[in-house]
Image (cartoon, rainbow, N blue to C red; front, side, top):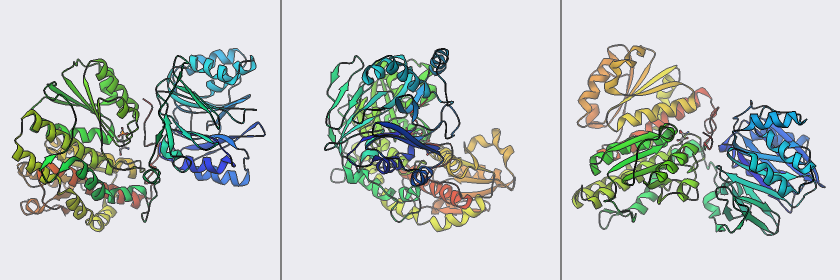
Length: 606
Ligand code: M6R
C-alpha cells in the first residue's frame, strides 16, 4: 500500500516523479507528495486526494531540482490530510515510506521527551526525527539511516533524501518491496518495476533486510548485517510494463475484455493440444503430500475456494482453504506432507506472504500462483507458476481471477494425472474443455449491453444477494465482493442451500437476488432455492445456460443465458457477468471504478 519513488536524474525530476507516481497510484491514492533538492535545499509539495491535485499544485508552485523522492499514500496512521501526506521532513532529512512502523508510539514518546516537535499523526514521522537526531549528532547520512533502521519494528520500505546531498538516496527494504533502477548517469528507486518502466528497464530487487546507497553512477547494496552484497540486475520487458486504457474508459473495462486473450495465452503455456495433456513441468514429488492447503486473500481466496472443489474431485485429497490473515495467526498443525498453495495477483500481499513463511517453517512444500513474476511470494516459493494475466491496474481484480482459476485448474489436472487419480482420457477431456474458454468468454462478453440495461435497476438497490451451489458458491461470493468494491452497494454471497437458515429474512421486493445456476446435477436444488426467494417477492436475476433456462421454474425478474460449457470451466465463465454487472452498476452510481474509495490494489500491510 503506498507507492514510493526516488530519482537522481539529469533533468528536472518533479514531472518524472509525477509520471512514476501515476503508475503507482494503484497502491494508494488518498494523497500524494514529492520532495526535491534544489541547490542542496529540501523543499516539498503535498496535496490530498488524487495525483491530479499534486500536479495542479506543481503548476502554481513548481519544484526545481534534479534529485527527489515521491509518494502516493494509502493511509494507515492518520487521516489523509496534507500534513499527513509524505514526504515527511525533519531538519535535513526527508523520507517516503510504505508499510507500518509498529513501535512508532514508543519512539514518538522518546523523541518528544528529547524535544522533537511532531507535525503529523503518522507513524512515519518518527523516522525523520530519529534520523535527523543522528545527523545533528554528527553522523553521516548512511550512519544516521542505519541507526534509524535499527530502531524500527514492522514491515516497511523507506527512501531517504538528505539536504546538501544531491547525489544520494538511501533505500531500505524490510517487509515491503523495493526495486532499484539503473540508468546512464541516473539512478532510480521505486515500489515496483512498473513505476520505473519509462525511466529504465534495468532493475534489481532489494531482498529482505537490504538497504542500498544509491548515487547516479554507483549503487551499493548491503544486507541486514551491513555486509555488501550483489543483487542481480534484470532486464525487464518495457513494452509489457507500459500500460494504458486503450479505447476503454476504465482499466477495469479493458481488463474484463482482455480475458479471452489472456486466457488464450495461459492455455498456450499450460496445455498441449497435440497430446491433450497439461504442459506444466513442476518438478514436484507429487507422492510426497497427503494434504493441500490453499491460502490467499480477497478475490484470490475465492479462486482458491473454487479450486477446493477441483482438487478434492481430481486429487482425492483433503483440501483446506484459508483466509491468509486468519491462517497465519492460528498456527495450524502442518508437516512436510502438506502442500501449501498461495495465490496472489500482486505476489506482495502481506498476510499471504506471512502465511507462506509459516508453512515453510513447518516443512511444507510451497507452490505459488502469482501475476507478478518478480514478486516476493514468487521468489520465496519452491515453485512459482505465473498466471499470465498481464498487468492488472484496476483495483477490482478481474482478469487475474480468471487466470488464477485457469492456472489452479491446470495444476490440479496435471497433479492428479501424475498421482494417478485421473486417467489420460479424463485429462484429455478436461484439457479440451479448458481450451474452449477464450471462445466461451468472448460470447459471455457479448451479454454486456443486456447487463448494462439490468444494472440500471440493480444499481437502485441498497442490498443485493448472490446465490450459488457447488463451484457457483464461490462465484456468488466473488460477485458480491465485486459489487461492494466498486459500486458501494451492500452485497452478500451465500451458498443457495444456506439461504433459508437466516439470510432469507433480508428478501423483499427491493432486494435483487442473483442466482447462479448452470444446468447439471445441482440445477433442481437451485431452482427450489430460487422459488423460495420469488415466493417472498425477491427480484431474481437468473444466470444460467440454455438447458438451465428451459428447466427454470417460476418467473424470475430477468435471466442471462450463458453458452453451454463443461463444469470445469463454468466458474470462469460465470464470473464474467458478475464483473460486468458490478462494472455497470458502478457506472450508474458514478463511483471511481478503477480506484474505489478506501481500497488499494496491493495490500502490503497487515
Ligand atoms: O494481490 P493479491 O491477489 O494477493 O490481492 C488479494 C486481494 O487484496 C485482492 O484480491 C482484492 O480482494 C481485490 N481488490 C479484489 O477485487
